[in-house]
Amino acid sequence: MSEQTEYQAESYLPEPAERPCVLVVFGGAGALAQRKLAPALYNLAQDRLLPRAFALLGVARTARTDREYRGILRAAIHEHSRRPPRTDLLERLLGAVHYQALRPGQRADWTALAERLREIDARHGTAGCRLLYLATPPQAYAGILAGLHGCGLADKDAGQSATRIVIEKPFGTDRPSAAELNRRLAGWLDEEAIYRIDHFLGKETVQNLLVFRFSNAIFEPLLSNRHVHDVQITVAEDAGVGERGNYYDTTGALRDMVQNHLLQLLCLVAMDPPQGMDLPCVRAQKVKVLRAIASLTAEEAARQVVRGQYKAGEAMNGYRDEPGVAADSQTETFVALRLDVRNARWAGVPFYLRTGKRLARRVSQIVVTFKREKPLLFSPEHCDWRSPNRLIFRLQPAGGISIAFDAKAPGPRLLLRPVRMDFDYERSFDVPGPEAYERLLLDALKGQMCLFAGAHEVDESWRIVDSIRAAWEQPGTCPLREYPCGSWGPYQAAAIFTDQETSWQTT
Image 1 (cartoon, one colour):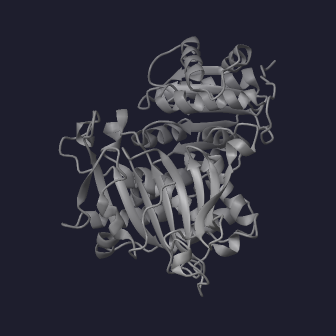
Image 2 (cartoon, rainbow, N blue to C red):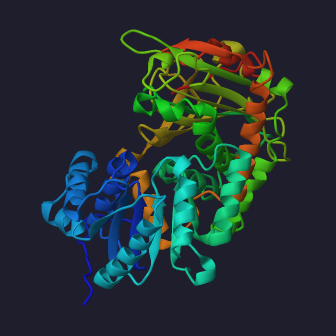
Image 3 (cartoon, rainbow, N blue to C red):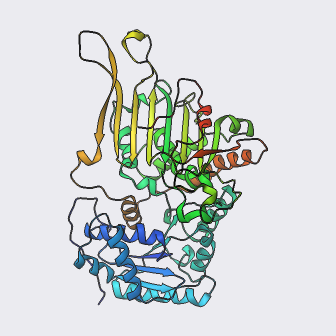
């Protein structure tokens, strides 16, 4: 008889995953698995959202027993779960956890993995349904994918229709490598079985962008070049690269953040209403936005892109002093750029994107600044002309939406002052929202793909990013600017604005 695990619900969330599944995590004892995936699984279990027939198989190079691996995940859940774990529930979940050591270059290890999965299917009733999660460094992807195909775990021609795969960013290192990865995957799995994960898309406030736009008729008609002056997207971090120096120094902010997070946010703001909220409709509209952004020439990049690198500050290392970073590194830790979406809806509206490390504070937001309507009924003596109407999407740390507009100040004189109307997630809903990885894991378990990037989105994003990187290789184009830790980046970032009235907005 198979062993099946069920859990008690404690809060409202979407309907649970019903399809049996073995979640196979490559890099099963790594930082991502411990800090994000294990806590997410526990919280899904507490909310009774995991399938009744479910098991987790952690895979890594180190030899461990199931018991040792369960101890690692137990400690990780206690440390990183957003809710204190209940002992009884946690132990029941850990009872469905297993471990398999694997050396990617050893064919016998892949054969042993396939056999172990058959044993788990028999024990937990998971019926050959697998979700393969690559929580490893990107350079390990090719070897893992080849091993999976070689042992028959990723082979659509062999009837592996119940196999799906989740791949973490970065998906490739440039357009050719991403295309090669897509080519390999397409030969072994259908596109509907490939989940390219961007954890930003799992955030409640990011998901609310589409709801806000397309469920509220008072706002959507305003989001076009008829009314919008500019759009700013900021993803700022106050932390440095930490222990990721080896990875980051070969990647940089443009590939680490702009290629995925920021361009995905741009798509959600700029896309036209889809015909439906199903996967093909949403993806098609996002691809249209990306294709409306031209590749930048070296001359355009010199005017529209600023890159920087943080230098030492008070009690803070400079980037080149971080572990794993080359002493003469030219890797950017900050990027600001202006992009133009050349379609009927957005022509003439600049989109300003910036991201960086060791900035003044951690904040992610989208600010839509509106044009001043004409004719102007109030003279300059009545109002502050530097405070236009703004729509602000706060993504983190505190999610919400704000509208900045003018109101008459109290008193006998006609004086206009900028005020704000705020919607705050924590104040508006009693139930705490799930972490991004909870939502993304649940969607992957259920086979829902709207929050995952498609092959064409990845290709177009790399096209834009590669054009900027090619421009950087031209002598004198976009020199690397230093900025002090705790600032908002190089002062030259203001040079990308199309007029002198625009400035970076940080609420």
